[in-house]
Amino acid sequence: MEKFEKLTGIAAPMPLVNIDTDMIIPKQFLKTIKRSGLGVNLFDEMRYDDNGEEIPDFVLNKPQYREAEILVAGDNFGCGSSREHAPWALKDFGIRCVIAPSFADIFYNNCFKNGILPIALPQDQVDVLMKDAEKGANARIIVDLEEQTVTTSDGDSFAFEVDSFKKHCLLEGLDDIGLTLEKVGAIDTFEARASAERPWV
Image (tube, rainbow, N blue to C red):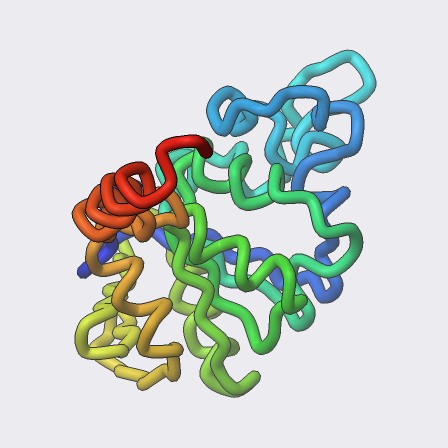
C-alpha cells in the first residue's frame, strides 16, 4: 500500500450530504474482486448520462477537477452498504483524502485499509475548505498526516484527529497484509517450533 505522509493536491467540492456507497460505486460494478479498474465508474450515475456520455456539470468531469486527489464533501459520507469497492473506486480514480463533517463507520475504517485518509472536521471548517476547493485547479490544499493539519490555499490551517494506530499504518503504507508481514520473523519461529514439537500435525 502506498504511504501517506503529506499531500498537496487539487480538492474537488461535492457539497452533498448522505453520499452513500451505491452513489460512490453502483451495485452493477461489484462483480470484480480486483482493486483496480473501478475509477472509471466512480460516481457512475452522476458522471454519465443514459448513453454513457459524460455529464459536463458533474464536478469530476470538469477540466479543473479531473486530477483531484482530495474530495471535500457533506455530512455522513460513505453511508449505506458496507462495500469495500467504494474506497477502491475512489483510490483508483486518484482520490487519496476525503474531508467531511462525518463518515459512516465501516466506510471510514475501510478507507484506512486502502490507503485513503478520511478527515472529519467541524462543519464551519469544511465550509471554508469547500469554498477554497471551488477555486479550481489553482487552489491546492495541503494535508499533512504527520502534523495532522489541513491547510487551505490561503494559509488557513485546521487540526484533525486520527487514531494513532491508523495513522501509523498510513504513514508506513501498511494494510492488513503488510501488518502481518511485519511479524513474519515471529511467525516463522513459531511455525518451526510447532513443527519440531508436533511433527505429526
